Length: 91
Length: 377
Ligand code: SF4
Image 1: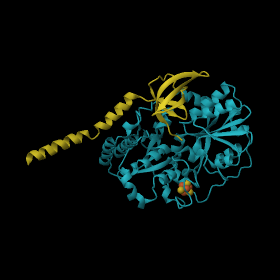
Image 2 (image 1 turned 180 degrees about the vertical axis):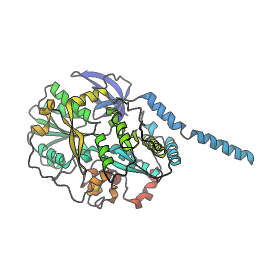
Image 3 (image 1 turned 60 degrees about the vertical axis):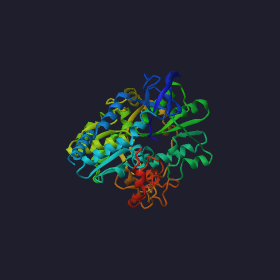
Image 4 (image 1 turned 90 degrees about the vertical axis):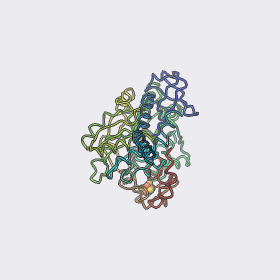
């Protein structure tokens, strides 16, 4: 039940004095309360839990994390290639 | 879906795994606090891909599992009242109380409904002014802001026939209780990312320092979990104990300030009993005095409860990471998700149910799951 999932804001409106949004979760669209993130706009990604947007998903941070993952082990790979090239040449 | 698939990439998972294998030199025990992470770990076979020296201990972070029996029994008593419409998240319906569960109350004619959000329960209250609508407000810091806002809205919109049965729990006091236990084996924590989306990370440096444990804020996708493990192992190998944020796309240091303000207005910290573990000081929230009239415990005085846990169930030890589910004699025999003896077998985030669903039936079964396990993501 603690599941919180990323979704994309596709519409924002105000209802009973509360900011609300329609959020698309990979094809399923749900009503989400924006009381805790009133600045969210159409196109933004957010983490949603039991009908509430809890935090904006930071695209820059996401890309930086993926870049970090890609760089892990990359040095060794280059070394690895150099070693195998050297081994090839030595033959 | 953006922000999901990228964080399930098998090629990058391999890199993170290789890096962990290259870093580890000694045995380490890490606890993932959140049940959502437990589910993800078992589902993707992450525990079986890690080096043997890295053990993942499953923590008490499934709110369904730790809601105390007494609270379940109170829910059953309130839900059975003829004037009450009792609303709950779906996975609470099959949690066994001393006698039966919410499903049974529903079967006996009780008005029990599953909702997706507490706001749905408030809407039911608005549409049926002649009913007493009660929402079962359980959960960690992730869920508490939703329930706080719903009570706040009930008052603002003058919806008097709504109340909350509150059993909220807080993570930091649980981490402290685990570290203080004389049987504690935990050397580092993967902290629950979405709890920190709300609360930020400010509660953790003091705990990391006092107990000398690395605390790494960790997300839920396979790569997020591997990154949490990688950072925790790196700290352990270096003899460090810092707080790190391995989930920066959803966690800011300050959390969500608007949610924190609402929590402070609607709730106050209280001692809370955790099912199978016992009372942990300051580990829960209850409604603040100003909102007492919306407290279902206050509105429907329930007395004369006699709670009794099934003796065979060892979920208390499972929740503290002292026992793996398949080591319980009842696991998979008398206790299954269809006939759960304890709450940890009910929710898919409970360790017992996760082990059962993904056929972790014991060490002997490891070979059978190895094939699946290689397909991270
Ligand atoms: S397997 Fe069932 S009886 Fe055993 S600890 Fe888990 S929930 Fe309790």
